[in-house]
Image (cartoon, rainbow, N blue to C red; front, side, top):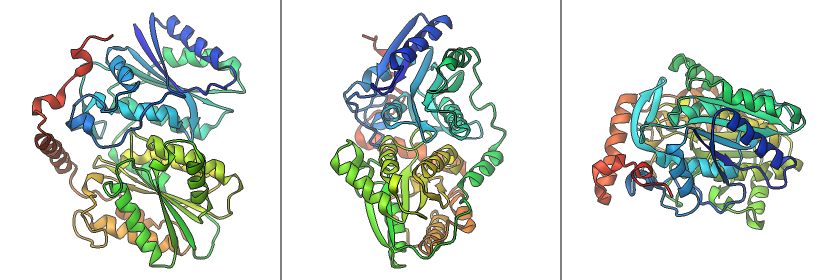
Length: 446
């Protein structure tokens, strides 16, 4: 059997070699006689730009010609795929998430309903089991639960036959071998804990509600971070961020807009941008959902903001606005948990989340000041949220109730989405049959 290890352990991590060797030993003991490693900690990999070229322009392949091509090619023939790296806000850190985001070429753009929600269809006949190994300085039950939930969501979306997740604590290395043995010996069925959509909806609403925060007066400054890596002026996230900016400025709030693409490198400009974002009384992250979590560049931005916030202001608030390309906002529930962990780490008051399903209905040409279908609920939610946030309050229950209202029946959204991808492919000259291409099984591996 073959295992792929996608690792982002920092090169200066104590016991790094020991952990890698221990994982190999446990994999071999579990019957994996071929182990292929991809170290992405400091690899020069591009980031997912969210343009869907790997679905409609050259299906099954990312357009960026770098080390990710070899990773994607290796996965369909593997029996196990292991993600290994530090846990950041309950999810994966920037370096590992950058590689994970670009694995969406391994599924198709087309929709189907599985595990109570909409998901993409498979591209390949078989997929490997999915295992996540995270590293934390010490035990953290909240991040452990989020890490487990992320592994389950990833496994559903990547058609894994089995899955499991473990967090290893740096202060308990004597437990590592047992944890890794348990990881590989006791698979869970992806989605086994999902009862129905109603339960998922309840989970989302509970995690999206604001914490009990101390009263404060109206805010004077807000910073908005656009988590999408698309070109400026083309993303739903930017459109949402600008809609909130206009509403906040109408209340006299001075707003500053930043983009995730400012955080491609960890240089002086990125650090300065993080400091500017951290200095505001209100931070809003407007971002798409990438592989059940935040995009890699948005994650990198939050990592740097958390460092800058070590000496941050008291009573600063944080609000994530997460838009999902599936019709159901329930897909964002794990990403909202990750956002909560960021708020805790960076010293923000969590002022509630705005989880949006049906993000495909939000396009730059649709006026977010005019409450017309299918965006009536969204316009109302943004207005209610901005009014409250500008006054120093949290996202109100009414705004949360509005934004989680589906814009269209799920079946209609799936049909329109599938037709939309086919139309885009037609305009680009891509044959319809090619949309289901399987390039990494059609060609022999090197």
